[in-house]
Length: 354
Image (cartoon, rainbow, N blue to C red; front, side):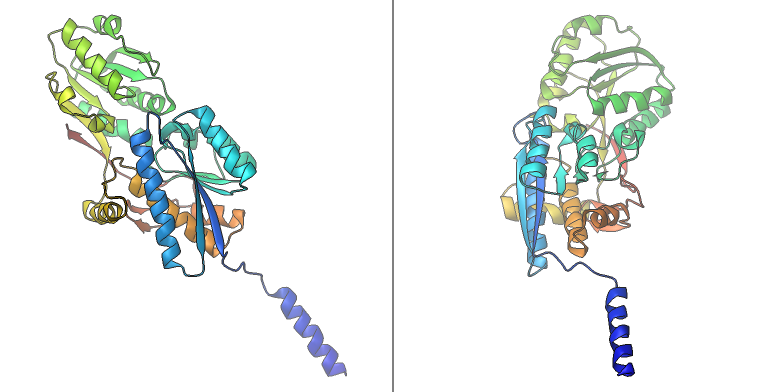
């Protein structure tokens, strides 16, 4: 009897002492918030498709687990992004979100933190991430500061003496300008900031000195860029070199930019072309067209990584820690790490002539 009691006590102790492990969830619900109809729709649609493709691929690679993706259009609006986030988290009770497109991610950050929702951005990595620590908000995109660091390095090497800055007022371009100015060896003779729907640059252009060497042009959309170039040509004969980010690569048609006679250099995210080709082939097979935005592969990778973390342990705190501690993740967008933080490392920005 004493042996039986001793055995029973030992058994109870072992059961209580054995750590509990969450079994893989049978269904994973994850939300994707993307700009599908606004100013960032080229990238947003590519991100949406890559997100859905990742959900499908993960499900096929993990028999017994179904993935339920919920997609919301943010309309490239802070207001609509916040509404969409509240909908998927409060109504649908989703704890994992991929998105949003570009800087509409910014208003999401405090909500994700307050609600303990794991949110990861595919195409914004601005100062908000490194200005304060976050526990639940992540980004797998390239550091925005890298766009101007690459540009200013080349401009310094070329020995420009005077540079004029024309930039839209957005969180993204705020980061770029603030990073550029202290690094520039050239004198910033003009710094003009404008709202997103500004189309008249004549008075600004008239104030630029005649001997300006180069222009840092960080405008928000094709309409702004084309209006600026057209008005410069109407008012002036000089053609200083123009440096900008990769938005200019998405103008349609590009001849609308080249015809003005400027030399353009733009910064762009560098991917492993062979690996990216594999992703593009997979994407085209699924959607019958190539991804237009550079963030599609990133959206795919972070969705796959997030789903993998949820499969391992669906507890939100465990998922948060899993994403943060990801190291040397090999995806279509390259090999990247979070190394215990909220932003990726190992991302490189380059410069090329357009």
